[in-house]
Amino acid sequence: MPPVPRIPILTAPTASGKSALAVAAALAGGPRVEIIAADAFTVYRGLDVGTAKPSPDERQGVPHHLLDVVEVTEPYDVARFVADAERMIAEILRRDGIPLVVGGTGFYLRALIRGLPSTPPSDPEVRAAVEADLATVGLDALLAQIAAVDPAEERRMERNPRRVVRALELLRSTGRLPGHFPLHPPAFAYEVVAFARPVEEAAERIGQRTRAMLRGGWPEEAAWLAARVDPEGLPQPTVWQALGYREALAVQRGTRRLEEAEASISLATRQYVKRQATFLRTQLGAALETPEDAARQLHSLLV
Image (cartoon, rainbow, N blue to C red; front, side, top):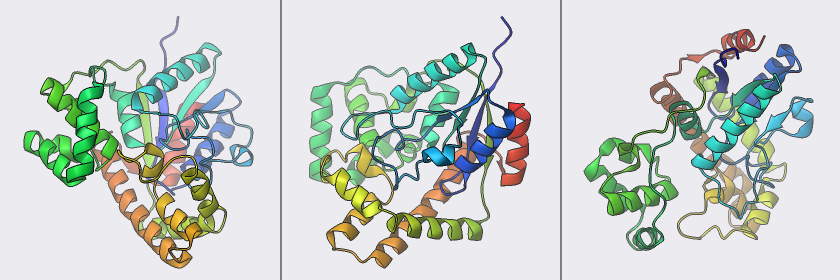
């Protein structure tokens, strides 16, 4: 058997145009290229507008995998993503295809590249106690508990309530935080291609996209989601951690003006883009190329 090649990954901060670049590269690479999405929210059926999920027309006949995997009421986490992505990569390789991983969810990509921590299964009793503390004392107090043990682990939580609950569950039951466990080796080796837009250009793209999404059905989609998953549930439901859905819901309910929601979402997205760029450089070791250089680099990996 010939050696398995390094699997290409295309990543960029949100609203950079990575989906379009990936499809163009896949078409140029020929019919063997198949795209595997690495996004924490496009896995959910029904979350289309607010996640900027590529439509069937935008996919232009290129096979896409790991979109619309689960219902919004179902759990989906990084461990399941890694298992699904590795299985799909193996299937594509078996039929002599070329897998291309595309996405901006950094901790999904980091786990795929480096491997998952060898953490034990969840302890429901300890987890319930941590969730009760979250409801009582709040997220900042729990983050402070993690920072007192390991400030780097506290930063790695990225203020994600679900990850914070899991980290404290492990700390209380094992004395160790997630990053203190050794990693299972990844199934494949990867070649990361990353790019970013100049700050002003990125801001303009974010504003245009947010405006189009809010006028293109996002508030109605948020209301649909709220009818299925309580946005006030604790810990915060995963689907409601998607950027902008709470503001879009407020627009639909008439408690926030559309222009106010647009400004708020655009600002939060610009801040998120900065964090994503930092993560890609520091956690994935990626050099952020221009879109044109990234396209050339990706093309060389797909032909």
